[in-house]
Length: 171
Image (cartoon, rainbow, N blue to C red; front, side, top):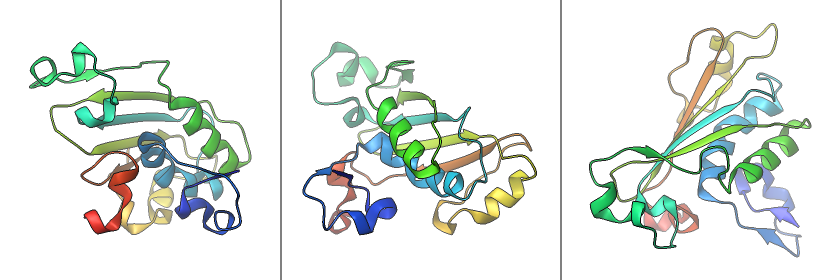
């Protein structure tokens, strides 16, 4: 089996008999952070991932807090400390970095229909400053850097959360 995120595992996907479909939150967290971990620019521990998503990111199961009248004009965290995608994020970042991670992941429901904005915060490795990390990030994902102790790596996914939003024909 292989994790089906072509930006990170392109060569492993075609010969695989089983391909795992990445979740939307793990994708938005892994894409900006994986290159930094792989290059040894950030510590594998102490990573904080803060995601904001529209109602579609909360899943398909009908629950009162996710009905439009309940969440419109509101901003709330959910799944704090126990979100179902946390192990998936840890797994992909650990695989890329070769060391176990233990991310803190907090998703937030914001009053929009679709999309995800994820910001990852990590500590640069000893001897690496935040500016050096910023220069090594791929240009389309380059964003604001935090103070010298932290790096923010923002990503805005497509208009549709989940695998359907990854189809380039939809953008």
